[in-house]
Amino acid sequence: MAEHYFCSVCGVYTHHRRRSNPNHYGVNLACLEGHNPFDLDEIPVVDGVNHPSDTGVMRTLGVMKFVRKCD
Image (cartoon, one colour):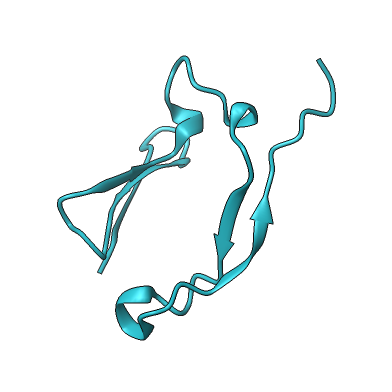
């Protein structure tokens, strides 16, 4: 089971310990100084229900792209 962590001050999701490999962590890029999610390419979006460890398949629903609306 994945372990999710949130900021105790504002409640934003900061990071998680990965279910598929508990020695790895996923980090909310927007929480890291000097990094900008608008600089990323398209990001695959999975359904969040069918985990590859359960099904053997990652079910991708589409892609996400951060698009800046103003400068």
